[in-house]
Length: 249
Image (cartoon, rainbow, N blue to C red; front, side, top):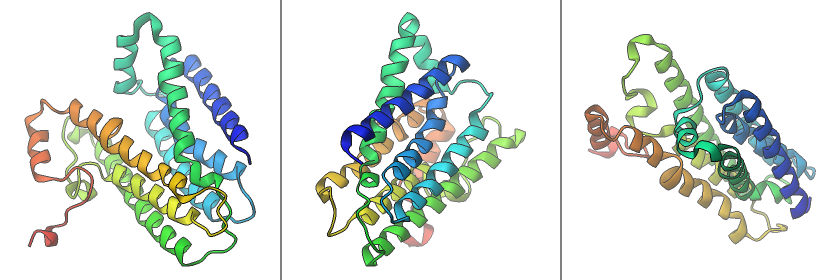
């Protein structure tokens, strides 16, 4: 599929979710839209080998369903609430541009490997990529499940999650997502590639930068910056890359 068609699919997909946000008066639906957008682009670019569409579908559907269960019919996420207050009367066009269109732009960049489905058979490169993807997928899924169960328990209200995978890094879900996209990038590499590797690598570099430096870790760290218990957690636990006890011996 050509570049222009992928751009149009992404644009109209994000426009649809912008309309949903207006109906619900909740920009949190952008989070649900994120994973499903990759699934749509993966299948739209399908060229006969199922590896990339299947890996993307497992990841995207799992994430979308998890966020749907977590967010649907609940109060708008604190990030979007803060922006809603800050933007005031400009909320309409700023939501369209700074939430949905900006997300669509990054969705498109990160989905570049999905537009390069020239792999004809699964070789050693694809096996390595699939292994990286699997570790990331399991890591993110388990971390999300552990956090979901932690928050369900009323006795944990106001507490910091420091057990399970969250004992090894402060943002294990983000670490898993980063691994997923490095795995997909490796899977997309092929001698018959229609897109050069130095463009394909934009995908994992972008998601790594966004989660580590922009919309992931920094926003959550800022939210808890005035909590002494969280600062102790910061001192004892790495941000993204897990640190196991046997590494410290």
